[in-house]
Length: 87
Image (cartoon, rainbow, N blue to C red; front, side):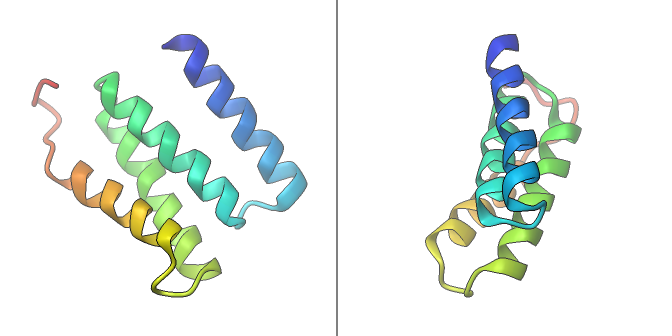
């Protein structure tokens, strides 16, 4: 999983550099990284990334856009977890 994290972080950094920090593709990568962190039990990092992904999507996409819906669904899923809850 460490390799996956490194690849997601690198991907996000490249997208931010090339597309800007508020691009929907950056949000998708942040959302994917949030799900990876959830699987690793890193809930706080996961929730922070998910929140940022939703913020980017809300600013950059229309309300009914599929990418926004996916990011919001991830955020809702994460809201159901508590820091002491095992996966």
